[in-house]
Image (tube, one colour):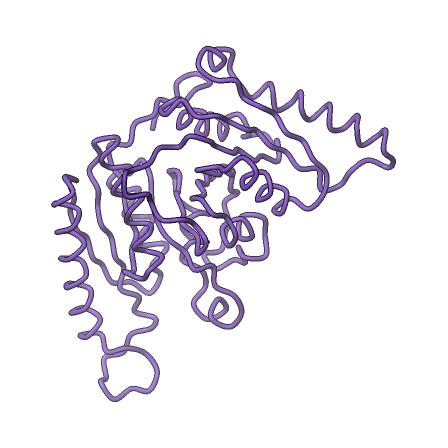
Length: 297
């Protein structure tokens, strides 16, 4: 997905579907299949056997027997590969074993120069998150390509196919906002979608007048993210609101019936951070549509 001036040349030649064969992963597979068919992409079905939850002993109390995990993985991969092939998708299967599935997946996607990673997440909370970390967190914070994440509340792909008709791009207007906006606009242009650019003031002004002035200023900043050529095919709307960031993004997405939310993500030094407590985690947990993240420094 090359950068062309202030726009992104939208090509999805190679898509990686990260799957653990769970129900939410099946929904992610539906989106990966639809994207691969729309863009004539090659699709790599990738499963990482998590050795941190495996054991070599059948009698072990904790963990799953590694041979059983390998057998089930092979069966599931064959089934999924068959489904994709019957749907007319050029697909291959790739299985590896690792103690850090997220790092392994990100490294593989980079090795094959993937244009997008598609994955599902159950948005873990509590002890489960503390023990296993978050696979989605590691992928989102380290991937060198956009990541399309299907959360637990996201709707499945309609049987008749889908396209992104309405896109919400939410930004904190930091230095890489224009680059992130270009990804959102590239997807919008492909399907001539309606685009809403959104910024939420989590620290409003000292009084009502000051807040209004800030909103006008940030609205102008949002408008600068849109190249002039965009207006030839779209009439983007800029929305600036004050309050809690994630709830306002979700409220806007629900109000306009968004098919896609696009967010910028900042890289992390850790593979096991605390995504669920942040804006991205809250949006992923509650969004009724896929969320695409673009990781920039």
